[in-house]
Amino acid sequence: MLTKEERDEIYRRALAACRPKAWPPKPTPTAIAEQRWAQKSTEVVIRDAAAQNEAVCTRLQAERAAVEAEQKRARYQAVIDRYWQSMLDAQAEVLAYNHNTGFKERVRPSCHRGSSDSDWGVR
Image 1: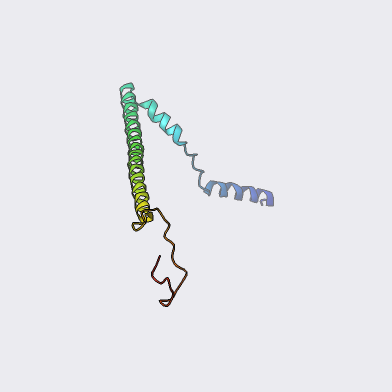
Image 2: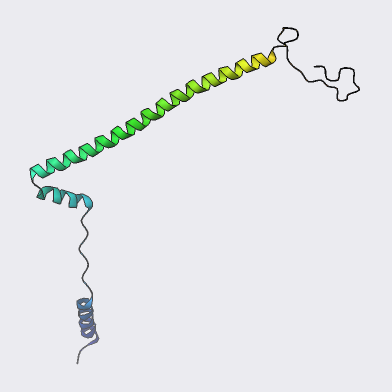
């Protein structure tokens, strides 16, 4: 007859045999890249590095071109804004000039509100 300890030991061994084995740990992406890099020939490594450098250069050129285009657009917009503001200033000068007297006067609205006032319609 088996003792309780012996039965427990047999049960633990059977249970351990039935459990699935733990998966091996996944290698890190850098380890995978280094392994692939080590398996390639030197010519292939140089060609891949050149292709990556070309892609980086192309991207940097595109970004630089976008920045330069935005700066050029901003310069053009500044010129347009300056001329537009000068046009508005010229219009304000023309409107401020009183053509009857020849003097620059401010046009102020009258405080009177009725047609029976003595200065109705006079500004």
